[in-house]
Length: 163
Image 1 (cartoon, rainbow, N blue to C red):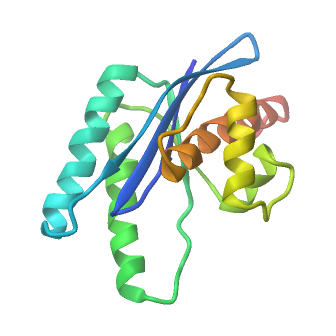
Image 2 (image 1 turned 30 degrees about the vertical axis):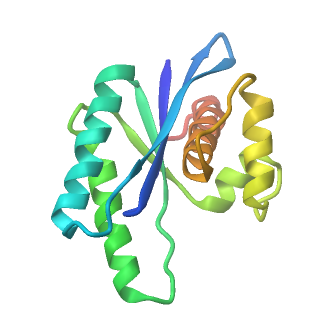
Image 3 (image 1 turned 60 degrees about the horizontal axis):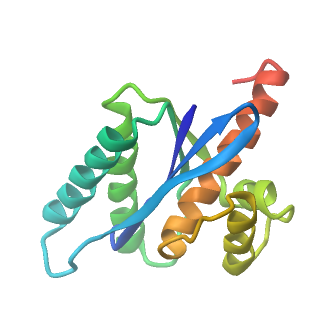
């Protein structure tokens, strides 16, 4: 099974793919989609969508996981993040890939054991859990963490007849 983790952002959307076989996780790929702030909003969203389409076509994930949105103090930024999230959710959905959303604290708890872990702690554990992995940046590291957390929680849900 291949899991695509997604960390949405208008500026730099992270993505990471892991393979799970016989309860073992293996790093497949990661990256980030940097958009040009000089471009219009529709052009930036198109960049995210087109790149995710390429990622999905290349790595053929079976499931996807995305971080739930958080609200910040700037309503404009929150709305733009919501638009980017919509595009990021849409890309796998158009390929009939199930998408599951997780709260940031739940992801951190699955990776580090603490819901309030720092970004550096998450990245360190991603490298431990996926030997040989050197994430491209914080966004791709967070996306790989998303995929790892999804693997953990999907097993728990299946065991307990949830979801």
